[in-house]
Image 1 (cartoon, rainbow, N blue to C red):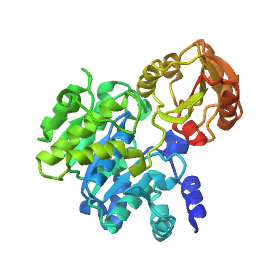
Image 2: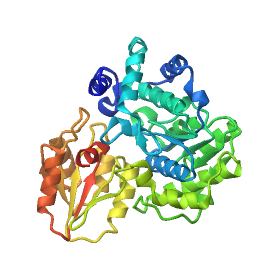
Image 3: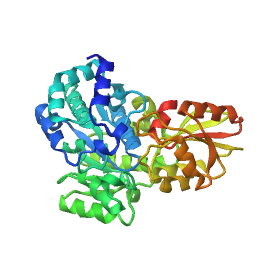
Length: 406
């Protein structure tokens, strides 16, 4: 199979949470362990930092990768989902895995994948770990796909575990309370491995402390320990907490002599994070006059933070291009959006995309008014046609909406 055929096979023949949702979720890591054994356990030969959390884990992972790259390390980075290109998920020092490597790995292991009915995510984790070992990386930043305890990435033993924050997302899988979700995320805490917690609330702190005590893991609460941060290419006030999480993680790595990272590497890593890692979609400015911002925030916790950022902007009229997937709790997220905006309702072009008519009807209940468009691009084009130079356009609601306009 060539690259396109390989991707088509992966996307269409096997379960994939990104397009299917609930049916792709695996409730254990048995298949991942089988795959690791089949691949001769590449995870045992990797030095890793494991990053979980409801929001901010992508930004935190990219910031860590950028800093370590500036410190002179060969850094593997595994993240999900991708925005435009599948290969975004697996990179080394900002260079994506090659199409040939993806094809060779999938073709070689296809019989095993089919026999054991591996999911898209399980295969991709195996690919990443195999690639990083073959390329002899110095350190690898591994972002959890969903949850933590039962996530395919959770076969690694990291140098440090990192949990950014806890919010209500993927409740059909992870639980309906903050405590239950914190328990799933805390599943990445390993015996005698330090853990950094980015943010906590009254409900989640005891969960983390209990797990850390059980595993004899030193625990660090970054929001309490770090007061100052450095400027970063990642805009948006909400990045402050992600930066604190990264700074505390680096402090632990330095103090325990696991890695050696200078202050200059930290400063340069923060400033060069987009150039070094090619991260997109985090309060990303696409244009001026009118100012256009896109952001991948897609759950109540993330959207509430982004909407607070939006309130600080100055404009004559606010235009919001909005689309979501069909498993989102609209009663939770729609009240967070401003009533005075003009809305452009659209459906992201994936099978899980929520019909724009349904979104518009539900939005009416929260006094959000606008028109329906039959694609994200048409909604976006119309927002630009209608906006004056002093207006503001926000594009979001889903990772997939942002991906279509980048």
